[in-house]
Length: 133
Figure (cartoon, one colour):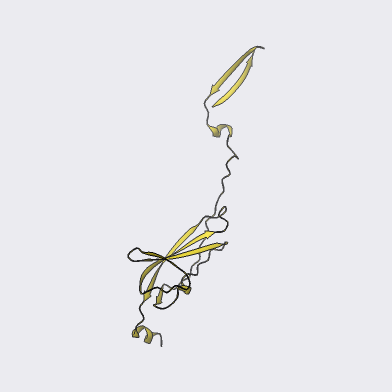
């Protein structure tokens, strides 16, 4: 709503109330600061197949190019999710590994997530012979 006060012919006061939008008069501009957040890019070079007994050190190694932290989860084929780290050893099976990145500068960057498949093969004589062990 806008109020306009006009004086006509030395003594008459007229008040006119007109509906308007806030943007037409600039009300509110600068009151709420809008931050333009950037989306960091996750770089992730991981082994997608490992042998049972191997830690996830070669898997949980993503980087984002900005300060922040990663949290990793492994999801099993039946939908069970578990938190994992570089020291985790998963049993044989198919997994989806998720890297959740939370930037330190949340005001300037938004959180991002990346996923990758992971196969953990069972240790057997065929695998060990192939690897020369």
